[in-house]
Image 1 (cartoon, rainbow, N blue to C red):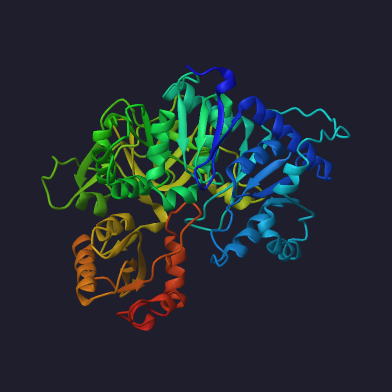
Image 2 (image 1 turned 180 degrees about the horizontal axis):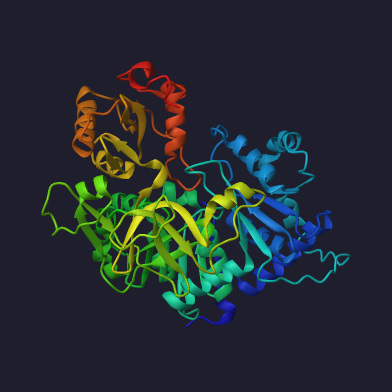
Length: 563
């Protein structure tokens, strides 16, 4: 049983050296940083951009801004000196948020002046190193009382940009408390005296920031934070930290469970029986991935019933539905033909038909929250019919900062559009793909994830580096595949890809383009950017990274009016 003094954040650096800050100390240090920020001249309500790679500095500065009445704008730090499009993304977010201040590291000092020239409203820049040096000063010249109301803006969460240019979601204090209560008080009932959370998720993304920085402080449960890059280079560190801290709760996207299961060669010495909630969300969930993870760590005592698929989005603060973490993984096997051609769900016995599709249940909505399925005419559909997932409840945010047009499109009546496709069966939500990513081939609605999942089973293609999208051709649409390869491309590999696409879609692909590793555009949270990949394919820029000559010229594969 942990005492109140023992609860707080444990921060690991990239070499996995830990440091602990109790929540009482976090609050004290945050207030000092808040005073420091205010001493520089910014006023309450000003947006403060944060580009901070160290988790401890990020958390203290994030809370420091909030305690001072400022509005933090978390942003992804660069992954490397030559990261494509990074400067453009940063400028876009700074402009969209109206940020007056930037807090970053001295390592990015050469990057700052060009930003100030591109964003004239950015009047203040300070570095976390200066904040550390001045942390003991009390800044008593600023002693203005500041109170917070539920409708006040807490921070701006910029969307990851997997489908469009990033937009700043307005997250209020009321949204945070409502979602935290639904998740951690009413759903899996967190006990601060016994529960411990572990994550390696990026803190500028909603799952990491809200789930493992905001929620733990709200309910008083300890949180262990590992750098994202450390996990990427050392996936085994995740379960090692779960074992070391006897963690009971962890979350990650689907790809992470597959990655750690494939990389974990030996589970000797690991005891994962402590885990009771193993959440999975933020991207489409594959049943086979979760089964592989459960099988890999079964010898370490991992309870398979703890696997908990979830569904949510930044515009709904974080989460909206959870599966029951005390029950085995729930899936439906359905008739693929009816699903793709008529948007109707018909259940099949497991393995009863070659053209079947297995979809994972993401559970029921939280108390006071609702999930429904809507057609393109704004009509709500009955269970068993496929359409757009819509949400409503106290976690729904008011929309996008400074973007009335996008906010207007976000709602139909009081239902929030998600842009995701799915259906409801026996009260449970099943998610199948993105509305705008659907490819219509010979009258069938094809979901790119289905094609990508099948292709990723082919040896030689990189998991998480395969993208399928549609292009107009011959009065309809045809599928184009862009795939990162692990090694040299052979005729056999190309033939295997073409055969797989034909089997899944019923038609040969219009083109298959093999590219080098790390070429496929991804969001800061690791999701492939299909529309950005499609745009790079159409304008020809993607061909610079082709590993072999493309199978068709743009003129042959795509008509002139493709766009």
